[in-house]
Image (tube, rainbow, N blue to C red; front, side, top):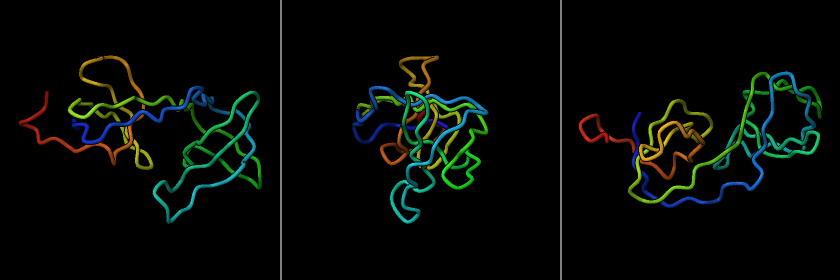
Amino acid sequence: MHYKVMKNYSDNPSKPIRVLAGEELVVIEESNPEGDWPNWVLCKGTNKQGWVPKQLLRIVGSSATMLSDYHAIEHSLIVGETVVAQSELNGWVWAEKTAAPGQFAWAPINHLERLPTSHRG
């Protein structure tokens, strides 16, 4: 899926959380299910803290186990850029910029507009 950036974005974390399948975390809080970013869980691990997609966690009480690997690295976006999305999760797309092939990161879908097939580039 190809998208054009419609709104600048640069709120990427300086130390994005990276967690591996099987890793144990402590649940700090869950996002508001009625808010802009449902299904995110703020977790803490050894020397790390960050928001993780709820679908990638097995939560029991205040403990969570990662079901798959996850890295919260984010793209900085500039209006007019295009990205190619590989997957979508909780309002974000895992994508590469067409100007930087092979560099994948997350981008907020509310800053993007899906391009019709004839306008991809």
